[in-house]
Amino acid sequence: MAFMSIRIEHIRLVGPLAILLALCGCNAQRSHFPSLAIRPAERAYNGGQTSAPAQSTGEAASAQLIAKVAALREAALAAHARFTAQQGDAAKLVNAAKGAAPGTEAWSRAAIALAGLTSARGEGMIPLSDLDRLQIAATEKAAIGSDADLAAITPARREVGDLLAAEDRTIAALGSQLGS
Image 1 (cartoon, rainbow, N blue to C red):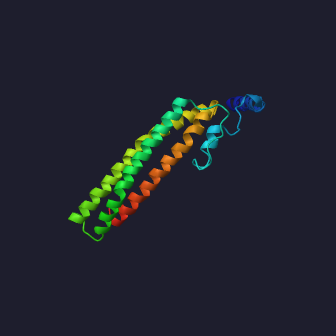
Image 2: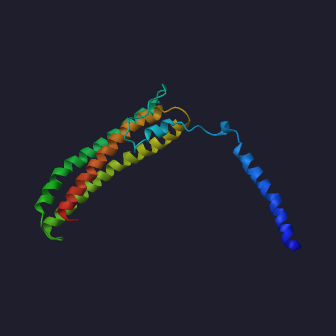
Image 3: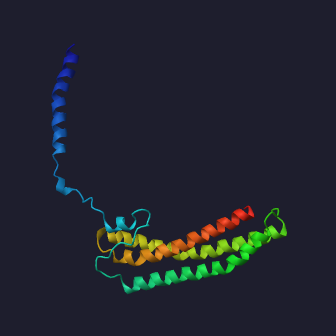
């Protein structure tokens, strides 16, 4: 019985103390918390990058970055041109192989042409991955300061991504016609 009374006494003492500590935690100063305002990087990624590029803060991106972005864009356009040059022949071979059994000559030629398209598409992935890397760095920079780099990279990144998405749709359509 004495043991029970000690426990109850402890609870009676600890209970109000716990409530007092909880109330003290609720009284923290609110000015020490970071702002919840939308940052430029969040604006750029709003809706899966379907929105317009972030508005620049007035600071311009470096000439070196602009030249690098332009070179990556040009490399992606050249890879897309190679893809487009192969696309017509691949479509003809896939159409000729419709209904052909896997392993036949017509089917094999179409499969090789489709593999060539996939390879050409892979060449465009290299500039896209470099643009992604640059965009990540620019997003980090925009989160704490200027978004000029992000504004310079985003349109090129979006254009290259759109080209590769179109190539993906072409490959998928031809692949479904071939049955692979």
